[in-house]
Image (cartoon, rainbow, N blue to C red; front, side):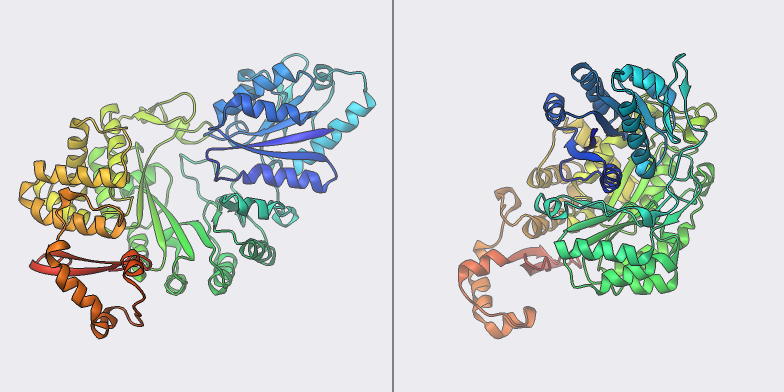
Length: 583
């Protein structure tokens, strides 16, 4: 019996870790299986054609919040063209409400309720054995007569649904195979590799499904190191750990971090951590990690203690803040922080305070997320208490609450777009630091009120009709200049100089006339600088002149009417090294 497992990713560069574990475990148990990784951006009929060409006896789909509609449509089409093919599905979007899933999608024969790594091989082997003993029975007849093993939901003959009392889990993660037997192909296709060294979460955040199992299980450190060594040897550019909270147990995570920090590799490793759990020892260690080796994602969600208590989240914001500030000062890793809009007890003013407190740290990225009221979560049970109005179907995003209205959440959506174009792009550090401070005074309560600046910038952006159009980096630079000249005229001259520096550093191919470049008028002084080798080596130790073409491809020297760091007026020359990304 041939089974095709379908991993439906949100982007081509992603890999489907869950279905890979299941498929590889099935293969090692001697079952005839094939992995098909596709993207929701592919035409559904094209994917259907690929599946039918494999001539499967069974197809297993992995269902997530980003692919549910796509997968269920695909399952219905499979049923039309392959009426005798068994179709089953698993994943977080179906396992908590199997009866509703089977009712909504008649094409599905079975739903995997929990972690299918071990349950699915048993199911397929039992199904194949049953079919062998009942050779003349149709698919429909098999489904009615075959009793699926533990961990599966299915329709009984009377139309009711049989479902397990609790989701199945894998207790021994060491028993799982390496999920990337095709690692060289994955690297050749420039895909992100996802990996987990643990499953489960001890916390019980009201909006999340990860803590429902209430158990955390670990893959042993020697096996984790063996897996990671394989990835580094293959030249994987980025490994993203999907452990829900990577830094729970120092005896587990530190040996892994120490091994990766000491390795001779160009691979970058991404971890989702809880910032207030970092001990003094761990913070000191992280400051020594080679630059670019680690990326950290830190969920804050809110800095309001009442909001955190309402969602069952126990965070020490002060410790989290101090740890992150220290790591950011070290400057050796990218740090991404998250906020969630629409949480219980959080109105716009409270969200603005959370934004200001997190943004004051200046992480490399600050993600403005929006509450998703997922089926099966504690948050779903609070909808009456907190007046939660949300989408009935994926992505289940919040529309309004008792504390924040639809119009305010819609406005925050535009703030999110503006913030991504400007701050999260990383292209305008000098300009935005200046405008945030000045805008805080002009539009808010003081220089620490950076949200006041982004609120005003968003209002202007919305008035101009720019929302949702998509903008390049140079388009965004022009928008910032127009905004300064219209809304912050007193700050426009200094802001323009800083914007020119940001464009010079981040977008060297562009020198738009509207930024007023000063290179020509200082050409003689710049040329004289490059001809003075002793002077150049004061700024660039070891510099050796080769030719003018190579020099201009790597470096730029531009004059400014203010010192970008002190903001004092006077001609200041800035040297930019594009290779090292330094000034």
